[in-house]
Amino acid sequence: EWAGKVPPPREDELEKLDELPFLHDTSRLSCQIIWSDELDGLRLTLVKEA
Image (cartoon, rainbow, N blue to C red; front, side, top):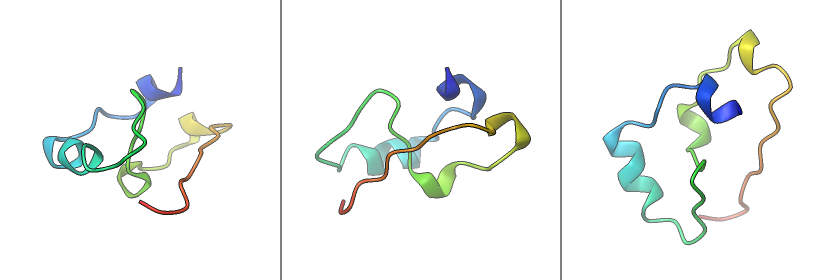
């Protein structure tokens, strides 16, 4: 699973995520994911508005 390949969200990210109407267990703020070769092949779903 891809969620295990990125560091866990920090408290401030979790607070922002709690404000979103459509939240999933694996939801992350895209600006908080630091890309690495280990994430090659990862597919993301971005919401139009938040």
